[in-house]
Length: 340
Ligand SMILES: *[C@@H]1O[C@H](CO)[C@@H](O)[C@H](O)[C@H]1NC(C)=O
Ligand SMILES: *[C@@H]1O[C@H](CO)[C@@H](O)[C@H](O)[C@H]1NC(C)=O
Ligand SMILES: *[C@@H]1O[C@H](CO)[C@@H](O)[C@H](O)[C@H]1NC(C)=O
Ligand SMILES: *[C@@H]1O[C@H](CO)[C@@H](O)[C@H](O)[C@H]1NC(C)=O
Ligand SMILES: *[C@@H]1O[C@H](CO)[C@@H](O)[C@H](O)[C@H]1NC(C)=O
Image (cartoon, rainbow, N blue to C red; front, side, top):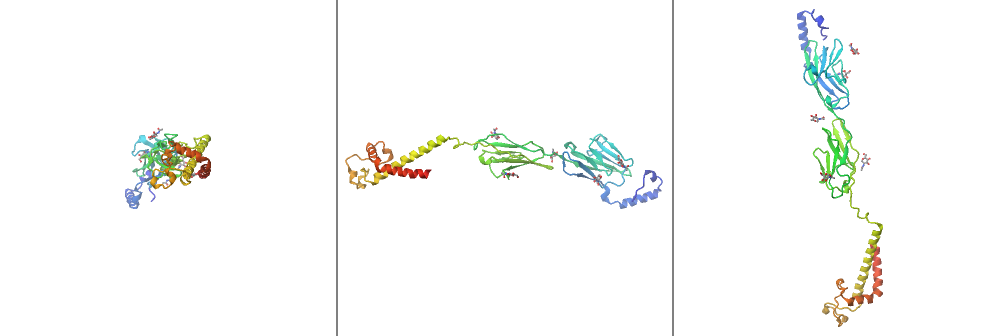
């Protein structure tokens, strides 16, 4: 299948033999080789990388190649052209200095930028002066910078403040993901993600939501994670705010109250069961003869009656030095022991 060596020799070939050669060529040429195809390598280009526009199935022994920016043959959009016969490369108006054309028609673009995104057209001039064309696409994606989490409130109060965390900077065609303490976000009505998932709202933050938070950005060519971000949640420091003196005061106060209660309890107990004279509001159910003394009835020993009843008060004073104090101190010791 060696084609004629050049246009010069073709003039001497008899017309009928040329026709035969053409018909044989048509017969043998598989249809799949009819059109070149362009493969972009790598298919997803990261900014700064080198990209090849590989020309496959190019006609054999072409006269030359031309690459254009866009999808039309427009000399103002010519990047580079190459003539096989002279081994001559011609740069066009859109050549940026980063493009190289290989003798097999493949175009190399070095350190691509997002401006290189778009269509590229290859024009192949065959040895019969017919042309073939095919377009390829380059899509350059930025390499994502390390994201940073920012909060709209650096010192939120627990149970009070709503905090908005933002994963920045905002970049196009980026998907966002969040992690809290190395886990994906738990299902919680107080954790709200925005539609693009770039902001996370923590409604009425609690100490459990301190974090650390990490956000992740992804695009087709890169994945990037932020440094952990911890929320400084403030809360009312009830116990820590009290000094040692205040705590001592509270303890002494509690002990005093317990002692008083114990003394009081003993007094009531001993008064009821050790035959101290007393009167009952219902004489018929109290068989004690001492309950019928001529004194006006003392209405039991209810606490609210104590201060208003001088008789009971004198009874308390009379009785205190003996069993009540002993019993009271015993009971309060037990109570204090249990409390402490
Ligand atoms: C064309 O040549 C270049 C450089 O030698 C090579 O990398 C590329 O794979 C070739 N293209 C095809 C389609 O083989
Ligand atoms: C074409 O030119 C390049 C340099 O411009 C040279 O390296 C190469 O050998 C030449 N090829 C032919 C077939 O002349
Ligand atoms: C942070 O944003 C939330 C929601 O928009 C808002 O309720 C809160 O007041 C903001 N905090 C500050 C300190 O601006
Ligand atoms: C984002 O995606 C859209 C559609 O997929 C595309 O048209 C646009 O060029 C992309 N932007 C960037 C910066 O890659
Ligand atoms: C999260 O993972 C990192 C490394 O993957 C580890 O150093 C860190 O201790 C983990 N933190 C928690 C809270 O699990």
